[in-house]
Length: 428
Image 1 (cartoon, rainbow, N blue to C red):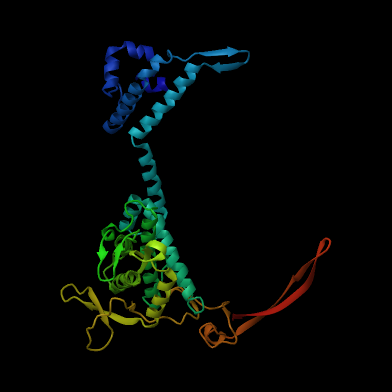
Image 2 (cartoon, rainbow, N blue to C red):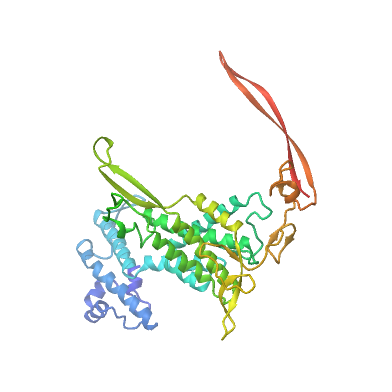
């Protein structure tokens, strides 16, 4: 390896001693210049840096062992001397130093991040740039998006639409093509999930570039008699990161973009308004002489229930176009002669929801064929509503298992045999 790095243009390998005896070559190598090297200037400077670092690193090796290394053998085996082992160790140490000097580790990380980010489906160009610069954050973003999807599936598990779609698959799941109430809920819950996950990762110290909210530390609330302490969640960082990343995919200038941006902000607003204050008392014998408080994130299930309530009262809106370029400028409540804007915590939609009874690739409906329903209930998961009047199939299942087991002396276990017959109803 060493001879290869120090070889001339004619391919002849020169020993370390020869290189040491050649003043011109020694001078060129120390300057990081290879005389007969004929590649690009960038590659030449890189090789010069490698050779320079390697030679300077190996100068102390001459005191350890004359080059080339010698082995002492007995019989059929070879035994390295102590100086030889030290020489080999020094070689590998020098290679590690060179690897760090040329930025090898950062280059490998950057290359890996670029490959991974280019394979994630559905990312906008700005999102891919963020992914490549912050690969640690994209993992947390994915966890937050999945948390939002799981909550969406929980909230709508008993409805015709159970948070499923036939749209384009992205890191945020499959997106609905129709600007309906369901799409509004999806965008809001995912935006809240990403902000929640980023803020939690900052508080736990698993994400670089952020931590606890330092602005609140040390301040005293004279009105309520407590002071800020502990590790308050840095919600501002989580909200801003969620806004920059999620809003970056809204590049089209149309009504659907305005709707998506509004619902993204609704999810973040709901998270911000439901932050919790936790306190701890300090004093002798449990007394509350001083009280320290900090802010924490709410349970995500709580946010799911709040957004589900907003979904039930979602506002139908329409775009107002600018007079100059005729592009949508803002959204207003869809009522005649009204220009009232929706509230900042209202979920909005621009198209009415399909009935989701039949599979339809255009609307993104999966249909309800084969869905499990409840024959006795009159709610959304009842067979009458779930199956859209098509009727249902009855499936009978029998289950047998050992029950009422007892230990008898000595030494065996006696059990009874229990059985159960159940009926499951699925939509035709």
